[in-house]
Image (cartoon, rainbow, N blue to C red; front, side):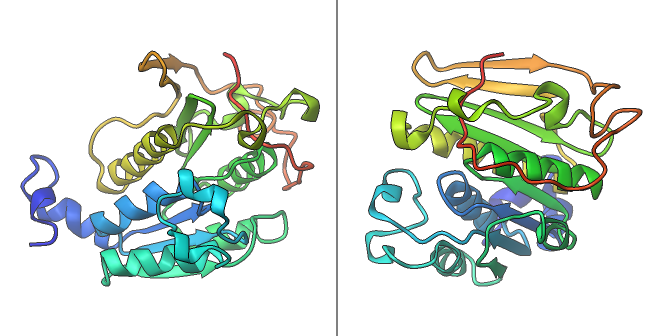
Length: 260
């Protein structure tokens, strides 16, 4: 009964639901993007959900990080998120990592998961997640939101990676942050829901993924634009002659919307 609306779906059925129950998804970040991802993946019946984040819940988070409540202020985000996941679906196994993703732990943390979702808010983390997943041949979905806009793309082994379109992080002084320019909370929910949908599609084998595409959303005009691009044969990470063969960390660089 819990999954009856999935089972009724043409092309999904009991087989698709069983695939979800046997799958493991890692959320890197339990904030704005991580919240809708965690809620929808738990409700969908993903068997194991991992959450990596070392931050605690603060009052300013509550405008968009909908998995956290007022009474959770001061609590570790992974703990708060895990509590809600278990309330939504007690059959889901939750694995928490009360630590930020880093050069030292990235490869080990992602190794046990079928799909990784980048829910971070810094370029340093996004490039690290991209590099770690590509090196480990792991599929992942990356998303970013600031102001009224957002971007999202999915990578599977053999498709274009984040560096194919954005080879290097921008200069730190060329970066806008949600803390300085703001973000519309509902836009974060849209992007997180898209990321969760990408994970479900990958795990069940339905539909078409956002591979070799960058989906750009402008919430003010409600315009969705999909930009196609090919894997860059000269990409320093996934190209024919890669020069990046080990993980490295950049200095902290908050995420912004890049003009394409």
